[in-house]
Length: 398
Ligand SMILES: Cc1ncc(COP(=O)(O)O)c(C=O)c1O
Image 1: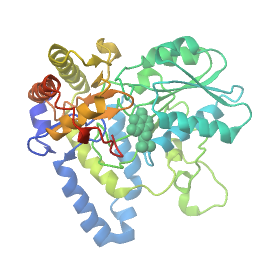
Image 2 (image 1 turned 180 degrees about the horizontal axis):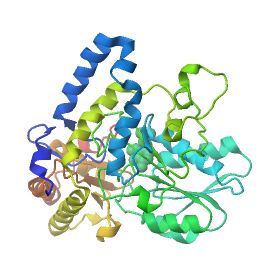
Image 3 (image 1 turned 180 degrees about the vertical axis):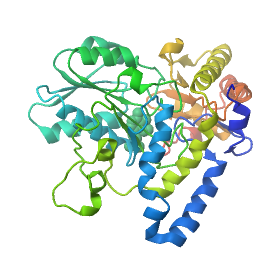
């Protein structure tokens, strides 16, 4: 059965009059999430208290819900676990990966990567010392920069600013041919594209759940470890819940079985409950339908904006193969333009230095929203309605 996107849209609580093109940054509230979290609070935490860890199955939630994400990213069941923030999961994957290529010292990434990933890599290099270095090249130069010195290739599949998508299978194959491991950050891929980590050959993958997967602000990240590494990857963040027997309280750390070892500490149960409810919506979604719909939406938006806003320059690849699920445009006054849009109920965001960014999330965005957003943007550009001092004042979060 083809995915019914009218049905998925009905499962979100979206404010009237708002066109929400920012689900690539923070997903909206699934109707079922509030009730699920309330149930977890009153019936589980409230009535079971600490016995909830066993009685309500809280302890298994990170892997049980991790399996639901595995389906969406083409991972083998039993190889995804939830916990911590994405920055932490990047560090964890990277530390394990460099440990598996002990004769090499280079972490290769690109200048389009999310800064936190690069900061984490630099922090790890400083901690390790011993000649470890982070090497960054332009996104289009990554393939040519993979050589025998590279220990780990660490990339974000879809660029957070432009929406440019890397070729995961090809770059991973090249990394493997040079004896390197590949880590993929799926922050802008999970729930957004037809990414497939298993057939793509990824050694590790990480991602967040508060964007396209709609777990809410601060929802936990996930990590995938390929089955071939699951029992050999050494966890650098060796917290007690990644121990083989946490409640033995041994003084010596022994890694847990497989993906369990990538757990660190106490999981955020309320936030995972919200995520679990949000993932119910995905049960009736075919990823191939999602991908086709996402491209249809971004194509329509790009065509509409280019026809009506000549001073905006497309930053996103036209080629579908190279595009994630967003459309971005350059303009020197991008910040003010976005504030004018937000004031009129069209929510996107701004990424320095000059990018206005719009996410296309088929679960709740349709062609009517695209047409509405294009019309409002065209009106703002035609009348210079963005040119007001209050639209230039930068807020803390852009
Ligand atoms: C590609 C990418 N990596 C890492 C992060 C950092 O995630 P967190 O704040 O959950 O650590 C983000 C956040 O948006 C991101 O987009």
